[in-house]
Amino acid sequence: MNLGTSFRYLPPVTKNLLIVNVIIWLALQFFPDSAKTTFMDICALHYPLSDDFNPAQIVTYMFVQEQFFHLFFNMFALFMFGNIIERAVGSRRFLFYYISCGIGAAIIQLGVFAFMIHAGDLPFGVTLDQIVNLDVPAEKVPFLPDNDVFRVWRLINTEVIGASGAVFGILLAFGYMFPKAPLYLFFIPVPIQARWVVIGYGVLELLQSFNNNPGDDVAHMAHLGGMLIGFFILLYWKKKGLFNNGSIY
Image (cartoon, rainbow, N blue to C red; front, side, top):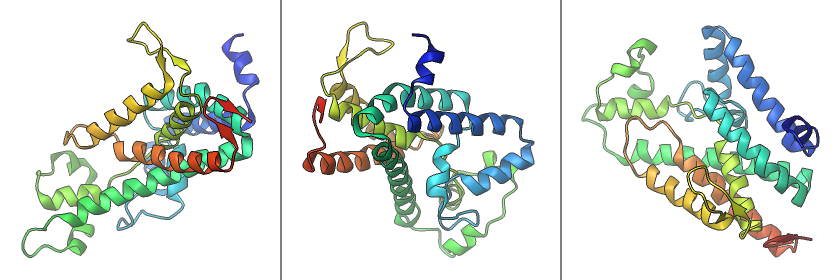
């Protein structure tokens, strides 16, 4: 069965999520810079102190991918594992799970930002309101000095995008529901049980979240947030008798 045939027989939610994400990414490639900036201001997730924040962004952000490889790996995981989970739990329940993991990832990431913004002491005489209202031209942002004022300013003005939180929830679901399913990783020639792959990803994300690397623009806590929310949903479903590990009723 070729890729086109496989796509045609995908269950509806997985198929439509793939289509929507790809269409939005393609549209962004043809938007002029001004339109792309406006789109990001509206749809990307912003911290609540930002002038560009609106509550709908906890949903819209997960449908925006900017880099091709960001899109590719998220959609590949959705294609491979979302397909299986949707068939296992049903389309309506799968859509609820996907959106819930994405929303949970957004809320947890915002919580991490809040801790990072409010945990430290600002320099004497500088208030948070002054930082929020700080007007910095976009072309000067990469050259801002590395101090507490601009660290807080960057956090307030960070844009979070991507389906990774929801996708990590799907990976967690696959490892939880089919723990002994063999998975092949590109760089390991032997199969690894799904549960160990998921645990490995979780540990790696946790370690990277504590690695203070200025060049790392990945929202690792959002990935962990998607997995955490997914875990609680799966526990509830299992308690209700919707599935056993490794098999679906």
